[in-house]
Length: 166
Ligand code: HEC
Image 1 (tube, rainbow, N blue to C red):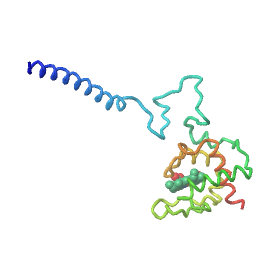
Image 2 (cartoon, rainbow, N blue to C red; image 1 turned 90 degrees about the vertical axis):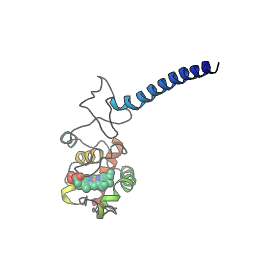
Image 3 (cartoon, protein in one colour; image 1 turned 180 degrees about the horizontal axis):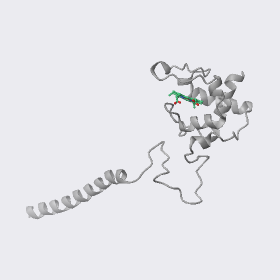
C-alpha cells in the first residue's frame, strides 16, 4: 500500500508543482512582455488615449516645449500663490538652485551648477517655458511633473518671478 500512497503523492505533488510553476512563470514574465509606461514616461508613441479621454485630476499629456512656452499663466501672481510657490520651491528647488535662486544650492558642488534664476536671461523666459521646465525638466534638470501638479507649477513660476521683485 505504501507505493499507492507514494504514487498519489507524486501525482498530486507533480501537478501542483507544475501549476505553481506556470503561475510563477506567467507572473514573472507577462508584466515584462507587456507594453507599459514606466514612471515618469508619457508614451504617446505607443499609446494613444481613446477619444474623449480626460486626464485625472489636473494632469495633462506630454506637450512639446515650443507649444508649452506660449502658454499664458492661468494663476495670477497673488501673495497666496507666491506663498504656495515658495513652500514648493523650498522642497524641490533649493537643493540645486539655492534659497535665493542664485544657483548655489548644497547639491551644486557635486552637480552641474544651475543658472541664476534671478538673471535677466532666465527672467526673460516666458511663464510657459518655466512651467515646462518644472514639469518636464531640461537637458540636465530633472522633471518634477510627477510630484508637482499643473496648478502648482504656475505657483512656482510666480515665485520665481517674485525672487527678483523683492
Ligand atoms: C537636481 C538639480 C535641480 C533641481 C532640483 C532643480 N533644477 Fe532647475 N535647473 C537645474 C539645472 C542643472 C539647470 C540648467 C541645465 C538645464 O537646462 O537642464 C536648471 C535650469 C532651470 C531653469 C532655467 C531654464 C532655462 O530656460 O534655461 C529654471 C527656470 C529652473 N531650472 C527652475 C527650477 C525650479 C522651479 C525647480 C524646482 C521645482 C528646479 N529648477 C529644480 C537643476 C535643477
